[in-house]
Figure (cartoon, rainbow, N blue to C red):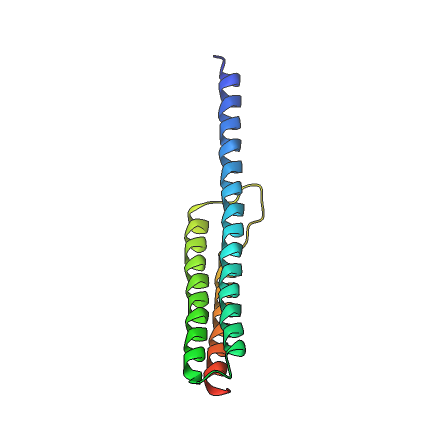
Length: 126
């Protein structure tokens, strides 16, 4: 096999590997988004449960169930952030502009802080 042909095959293999890493990074971002949506849905279910069953006695039962759903949402978004950052740090973007790993953390912290605020509001303001 001539040297030029061997070099061309090596370059093609490297390009394919680079593109595979780029696809994996993009899939990682989509997966994080999916888990963040699921976490937000859990938080919404908790808030809805609290609002729907507010008049039920004893009131602490509805608040406790709502709190469990909201805490589940916080857990999900934090777990998704840790996994997404871990994968993102192991791979390198080649042909794409990937999301900065700090953005995963910012989104997870924002959702968690807002959800914690909802828990405080459910227990103290109602």
